[in-house]
Image (cartoon, rainbow, N blue to C red; front, side):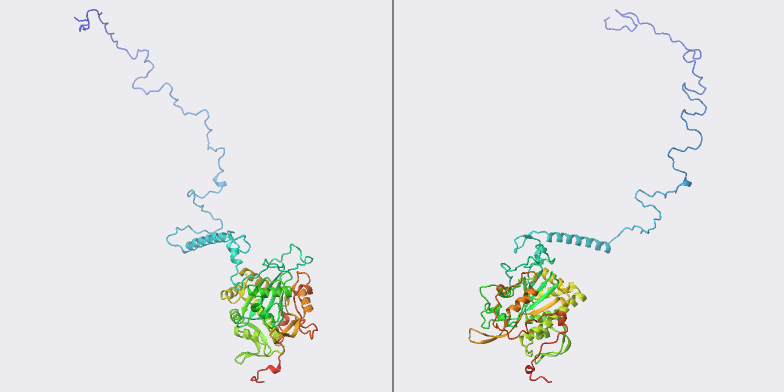
Length: 501
C-alpha cells in the first residue's frame, strides 16, 4: 500500500489507531448544579436584576402634589390671557384705538398707484436736472470763469440789441467817508457804485432817429428811494453831436462815429456832463409804447381837459384809462402847451406817476408772477432793447414795488431857453443848462455815495451866463404830489381853430 493511502479501517502503515469517541452521558437537569437556579419551564421568568414588583420611587423623585416650576407664570386668573397666535407676521387682534383697513390684494390697474409712481419719477428727473443745471461746467464769456447753466440763463441779455455798454474807466468817485468798504445793498446787481443802480432810458420818435424822451432812472437802493432826472431833448451839448443844432436828442444818431455802439455815445455824454455812472440802458420807440400799455391793460389817469393830438385823435377829460394809442398821444402832445417841450416833459411826469401806480396795482392785485409774465411778453415781442438780464429786471421790479409814492422824485435839468447859432448859419431854439444849479441838484439827489461834484468834474457848456429866469431851476416833485398835479399851462393862441368853445 502506498504511504499516502488511507486504510478505511483506520489502520495503515506508519499510522496509529484513532482514539475512540467519548461516550455521551445523559444529564439529569434537576440534579445538575449549573441549572439548579433556573425555574421550571412552566414558571414565569424573573431575571437576575429584575426590579421589585412594588411601585418604584426614584432617589430624586418630586414630592407628591401639583408641580409648580421655578419660573412658572402666575395663574391665569392673575394675568391677561394673550390672544390666540395667528402666524408669525400676522397682526394681533386687539383694539389700540385706531381703525385699520383690512389689507386687500390689488388686482388690475390702480389710478392712484399710477399717479404716485408718475410723480415719483417726474420728481426724481427734476431733481437730477436741477443738480445738472447748477453744476458750474460752462464758461462765462464775460468773466472767463466757470458758471452753471442756470447762472448763464439768469444773467443772459437777450434784449441787448443795442449792444452792451463799456463800464471800464468810468469815474465813480466813491465817498469812503459815507460808504464802508464792505457795504452791500443786498440786491446783487452789476452796478458801478454799490447802493445805487442807474438806467438810461431813451424813447425814440417814429423814425427812430432822434430821442424824444431822455430820462436817467436811478434806484437809490441803500436809502430806499428812486430819483428820475429828465433831460430836455433841446438841451445843448456842443461837444457831443455833429448836428447843426447841437441838441442832446441827436447824440445817438449824430454823435462821435468812432464810438460804437451808438448807445455808448449817449452814455458817455451823460456820464461826462452829469456825473452819473450808467449801469444799464433801455430803449424803445413811441409805437412800442402803444403795445406795452395794452399788454398791462391800460394806464388809469385823470385829465383836467381833453387833449386833441390831431383832429381824429382825442382823449376826453375826466377819469380815463389810457389805451396804448392814447398813451402815445398823451406823452407826445406839445402843441398847446405854453412852454412847448418843457410842458410836454411836465405832462410826461404825470404819465410816469400813473404808470407807477399801475405797477403797484399789478403787484398788489395780480401778484409778482403776473408782473414777470408781462415783462416776459414785452421781451418776447421785442418792444424794448436793454442790456438788463431777466434776473436784473425782476430784482429791480421787486425793489420798485416796495417804494411808496413819496419815495419817488422827478427832477429836470435846470436851465432856460436860448438861441444857438449853428455852423450852417441858422439859429436854433435850444435849452441852455444852468451849470451851478445843475451841479447842486446832482449832488443832492443823484450822487448819494459819491464825492461832491465840482465845476471841474463836468463838461457842461452854458450858453447863457447871465441867467434871465430860474423857473426851471427847481422843478422837483414826488409821485405823490404828481397824483394831484394839474396839467401844464396852455397857450390860448395855440388852440385849434376848429375847436368849439
